Length: 233
Image 1 (cartoon, rainbow, N blue to C red):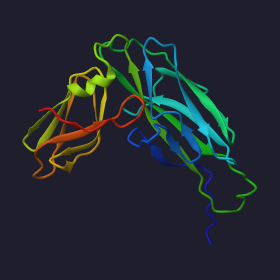
Image 2: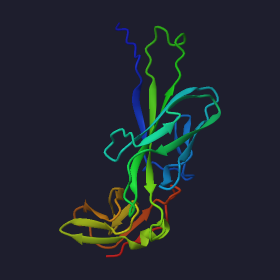
Image 3: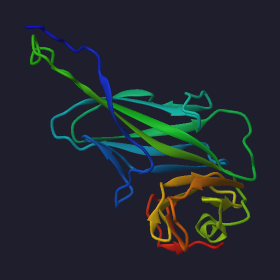
Image 4: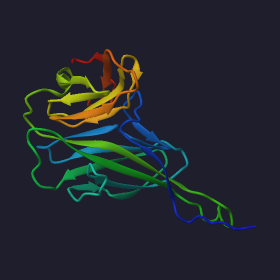
């Protein structure tokens, strides 16, 4: 018999922005985040996010950092504490401070906040046993939002436009906000959820034969799904 001992944690689960709950809280294992996205006003000194351990017995080691939109760790942010122990039935607060260069003032910039939860190991309990410890990584969007944008976030959805041509659907976003579209359909045919950058457009391949009315919903600042909209062509 081969005695296999796993001493390293394996990344097993990613909770990203698309994984939303009705309460707008991202939860994985016993660790829950206080929101599914963070809005950081550029004039603010910092943003914060609650990290809750709802497990009555399990302790976790929590590690937090920020990636840019290309999934590369960035030094533009300082997250404190970057590493801490989360006790059973406890809550801690992450403080996120921007320390990078001046960002565009006419649109949002997106980053990703990562929170990895590593369960504590009782070495005596697992001695000479085959065990696999799972680290849980939650990734949520972090939006840097300039002050004084000409339209409010809630009205941005009304400015989205759609264009069907050559078997593709073009989603046009003239607003200064990132718009996340979910439950997107064309003539009843479902398309993948997408995030369209501000003042930009995105092209999606349509299912064979799909045409007709575009319907969709978006995700607001609180992580909630907005009422269904009919796309304007």
